[in-house]
Structure formats: structure tokens, C-alpha cells
Image 1 (cartoon, one colour):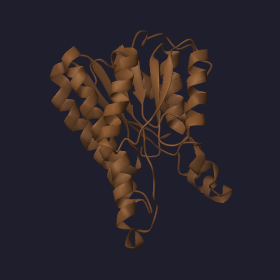
Image 2: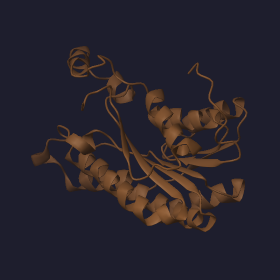
Image 3: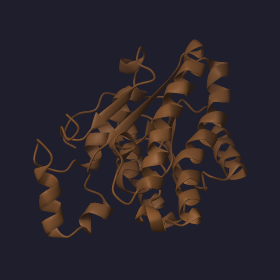
Image 4: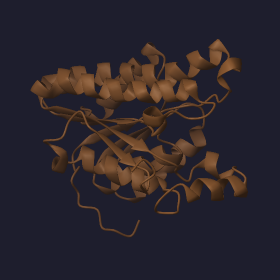
Length: 253
């Protein structure tokens, strides 16, 4: 990222779930560039989270990492308490944590349905519920849910993932209505095909076929998503709520 980022979030604190890799990592760094203190939540890879924290500190912002399974209500309570004990408030919540368990629908196991819905959708509900209690008291806050174009169009062998991401859009709209009177904005970002670990391991022929479907003829980068998240977390988006911003190079145009 060569663009100078204004310090829109100086003095603010953000939680980024799933913030140690891929899109979440870039969101964590983007918010830090804008001046925010950042809690990098992760599920398993402490080393990766630690590397992001170090990069944030190099940018001049404060950061901590915290392991928590966002589908566990007690773990989320501890996550939020740790952040408020460290930074006093939570001003920005980015619900980015997600997993996938891809299988053709007739053969999908119930446990794979439950696992994806628990992390991708229930996790966002639990984090939003707890953080919104504080935000409604302070009458200020920004919540951004990372959905997917799969939640708008469906996706092959991903009925669980598509259902969870569609549910995130519904959660966004309903939460936006509940919290609007308290000056809390809730929006969603729906990425298309982004250069992450999943795409890196996709066969070249498949990558070329997918790229041909995109009017811009390329996959997105995590920073493309992070830039929209930063906009929605900034004062520039104070009068925007309940919306879903599609970042897909024109795929759904």
C-alpha cells in the first residue's frame, strides 16, 4: 500500500476477528495505518498473530493479540474484557473470522454445516452483541461484517458457507436498525474472488477460468477489501448503515 492513509482512527480501538491472516491481516494493518489501536483475534496461529502485532507496532500504533474461538460465548466475553481492560473502549468491530467446509450438498455432514454456521455467523452475533452493549452506552461505534458474494449468489459445494454469509447480510441490516438510534453504524463488505491461501492453491487452469468471469480480469487483493472496511470504520461513513458493499471487480455487475 503506497497511498498515504489519513489518521482517521487516532485514539480509537478496533477488534478484528480472524485478524492474523489473509483479508483479516490486511484489515488489521489498514486500521493501524489510520491510527487505531488493534486487537488481532486469532483461533490457532499465535505466531502469525504476533507477526501482525509487530507490524502494527512498527507503524506506530498499539496492538495486542488474543486467542478466542468466536463461536464460544465465554471466549468472546474474555476477548472483549481483555480489549477494554487494555484500551478502555471498543470503537470498531470487524467480524471477519470465518471457516469453510466445502462439500457437495447431498454429502455434506451435519457437523460441517454446524461448524461453519457457528464460526461465520454465530461468532459475528456473539461479538456484535457484547460490543454493542458498550457502544450503545457511549453512543458511538462502527461494526463491519465481512460477508461474501457467495452470500448473494450462492456457491458450488458451499451451501453452509453461502448460508452463513447470507445470514451475515441479514444480521447487518437488522443490527443496523437496532443500533441506529445509538449512533452505531453497522455495514457489510462482500468480497468476490480475493488472492488468499485458498486461491493460491487453486490450479492455474481454474484460476484463468475464474479470472475470465471478472470484468476487471483479475482477482482482488486483501488490501482492496481492507480499504472499504477502513472507509466504513471512518467518520466518512457516519451516515451509512445497513449496507453491503461488494468488492468483486464487477463480477456481479
